[in-house]
Length: 310
View 1: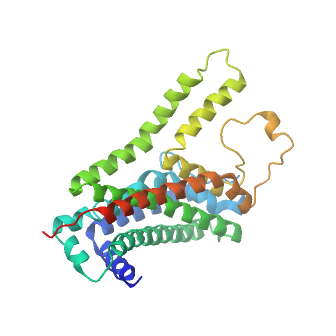
View 2: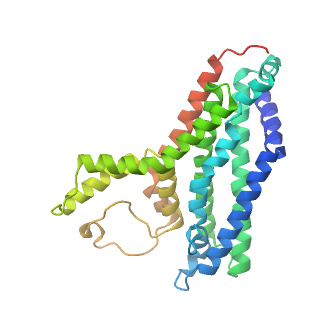
């Protein structure tokens, strides 16, 4: 355990002290601040006063996207930047064999690097959310209530897990490939595939499995959308998007096509936090599983990898 602690603090200092991370954080900070300020100016007067702070996170202002969209789209780049050279960079500099030769177990190296990356991600997201909270109090003159704080905390956990998946993916590719450039390129290719091409692939498969014609019934349309949604949920970006929608919008009860008989008798009242979590609990579990599986593969591969002195 002491070995993990040593590697953890060493990697944490490297992350926060690197110019690459400082530049990336500065870009994210300025962009998030701008998005939150523009969203506060564009919030409708009809917005539920009880959830103004949640609306600040999930609302967009014209061409400016929402903060949730920004995290969903650019959050993976944070994880990739932190993880793509975690092992390959050490190997290229010749410090990996030196590190392994120290009285530190090999598993402490991979564990320390991963948890240092997770801590960096968590501190980054938490800092941005606190800044947005300050913007909301300044621009809107409101303080987040207990319900909003609870929902924002769940959103913070989901964001950390989501970006940590990409961190573990970057670490995996840094173990599989010796060159950091190859690791970064493959990581970005996977990000592009899940972010852009997964939507097209899901649509094509759904069209082939259940074609929608002019005479298609509501049942056929629902089956088509169910197949499309099932395939799209392979992407961690879709899982995070659905979690964010349900947590930051208390009125969301279900995803996909909904028939009138399914919502008949339901009151249009906001759900409590616990029920909102239950709505997206499968997505939450799937996102955690993706992160853990990716890290487990990295762990096993690193433990079996031959490391030679250079």
